[in-house]
Image (cartoon, rainbow, N blue to C red; front, side, top):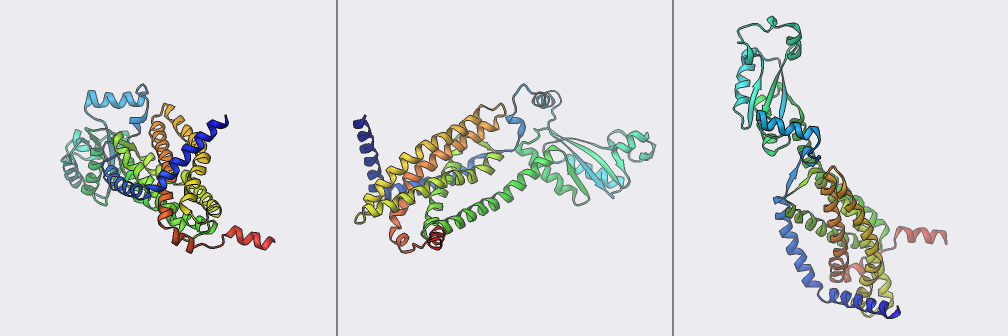
Length: 359
């Protein structure tokens, strides 16, 4: 039993020393992968269609399929037009009908000539499509509710309609959701990074180490997002959550490596490379078990009937694995590269100040 432990320890130290030895090639390979990942992110489609993730036997999915199969119509929207004379509404309807993927536009002039006053309609019918100074028209598309071409058509319809019109319906909602996610995602990712940076500045003992840790984690996040190109597409929820989740889950591993390295430097004051090799091995033995349970938790999402869980689970399990790999390869390489500046920028931590006050 003792021999097995010694063999494992020997193998682990050999691996750790190999990482220290090839630290520059590791950083070069990481940079190349990050550049490729940018193209991978651009080439990965983001899916906003919830129906794609529902089980095929659900009535909603079946109904969508039947609409497309039998009637050639999938998505639809309602347009509320305010303060516009009937002739102008009829002209607007013709413009909307010319938009790509618009199959049919239904309004009053679909069943009756506009020369016939609307007031002649039965009250029930009139009130269903008119309210004071507003009128309602229905737009049907020849594509699915959340298809990319449908969202493009919604945007074009809005540009044609102008400020006097309001476009509603599921397709319009999905279009707004997409625009909102794309505009706000960089903001909350930036907030997460700033908060993590502030916390590390307070509780770590070097002004520079938070930047090094975030650079390492950021590289792994970029590689994770870029490697999604092999799936073809990911859901918008996965895209929105994966970066922040990966940052939160893997940051602890990086902090552990830094503390372990500082402890090993005291044991090997003359050889910081040897200290890093031992720090890598200690980090591996500590975080592997933790990361496996985290990965198992994300993989459990893959068994959901709502397959968005599988989408998020696979991406996040991959992210945690890449985070661990980055923690024991990229981060040590960066620390060794900037070791002189890291040591020069050391400072007492907030916890150290509290301990001094207590003493």
